[in-house]
Amino acid sequence: MLRRVLLAASASPRLRQIVTTAPATRAIVDSYVAGETADDAVRVTRTLRAAGLLVSLDYLGEDTKDLAQASAVADEYIQLLGKLAAEGLTHGGAAEVSVKPTAVGLFLGTAVAAENIRRICAAAIQTGTTVTLDAEEHAAIEPTLRIAADLRAQYGDLGCVIQACLRRSEADCRSLAAHGVRVRLCKGAYSEPESVAFTARREVDASYARCLRTLMNGPGYPMLATHDPRLIEITSSLAVLNGRAADSFEYQMLYGIRPAEQRRLANTGARMRVYVPYGGDWYAYLVRRLAERPANLAFFLRSLRSNT
Image 1 (cartoon, rainbow, N blue to C red):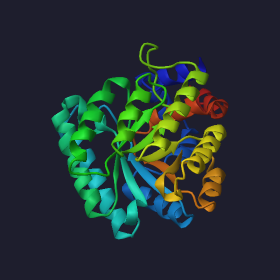
Image 2 (image 1 turned 90 degrees about the vertical axis):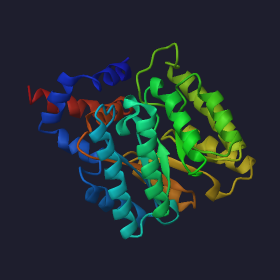
Image 3 (image 1 turned 180 degrees about the vertical axis):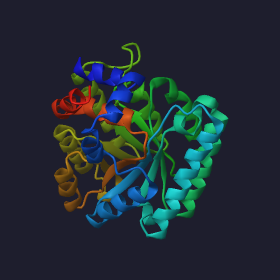
Image 4 (image 1 turned 120 degrees about the vertical axis):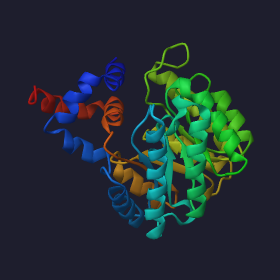
């Protein structure tokens, strides 16, 4: 119930105003967001790479409804890729970018988003790295997968994200695995209706495990995004059972969550990638993180009370 309340709050303009002006909010934001500029993102990437961690960078923002803004988001990613490459951080896909299709114009039409994503993919290839299309609310899933399939003919390393909470995801994993696609599997961080999504935690976990087995059994490149120790252990076991080399899959975790475990996995020789968001439009992302990690909520609510 708490998770659903928080996810609903992520879409509330009134709560956005309260939260973004609360005095203590910045301390929480800094725990999960690299900063507001591309230079901040590069600085954090440099630190993570020095610790042996891979990185996926997300310029925060979504639901863009203005053509100029959608193009500007793509330009931001292209600028970021150039800055990363200038410091040697993109070699071999060590630092890649994650793109939300709605941030680059999906709700303005698939052609708009596809062209902006194509521009980002072209810049990524020039800098020696890759792009992953983030998953969003269920209405965006089908057009996102269509864009990915169309662009993958030219940009074969274009990855996509599958959310285990959605009822369709096991079938999507089977289809993508058969084609050898880079797939990031996560549990999902959006509030979805029961008609399209599992709502009980145990159902989501079971779906994740089924999707995980499908991906690890296939010829693609699974990217397992989870902080759950049980699922990490299952992933390790499946890698052994399927004879997977350490470089044929990777673990992924969010910036600021379980950093010691991130370093532990990297020290075992596993590929461990940290999802690093940056930018000023951090509100919805922050509230979704609180929904996933309610232990932070008490401190956060105290800061809100002091501001009202």
